[in-house]
Length: 130
Image 1: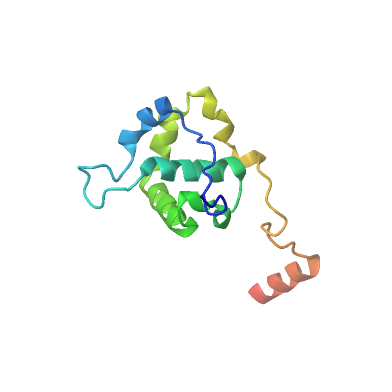
Image 2: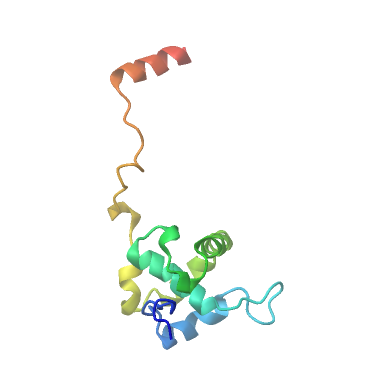
């Protein structure tokens, strides 16, 4: 066995009890319209890995699948409100409280902040608007 080729799976975040509470809220179950999801639990673990580490999507371990497909699915679920339902179902669980991050305490990276405007550029913009 070539150990370099074995994909190491990160430690799971969800317990079996937590998974049982949310699995029926997720799209892609057998019986749902459309495509049946291959592994919803692995996908949820991938999103929790991103939330826990704060890493960019491109750094998602390969054992979770291709990062872009995971991100696209995450984004679709966000627009459908699936994550709101999931967090409502597990929000009372103290084991997951470290994942609940309030945006008011998260600092923006220096390159993510808006560009500071000098007094001269403010006057110029005001003059152009007139």
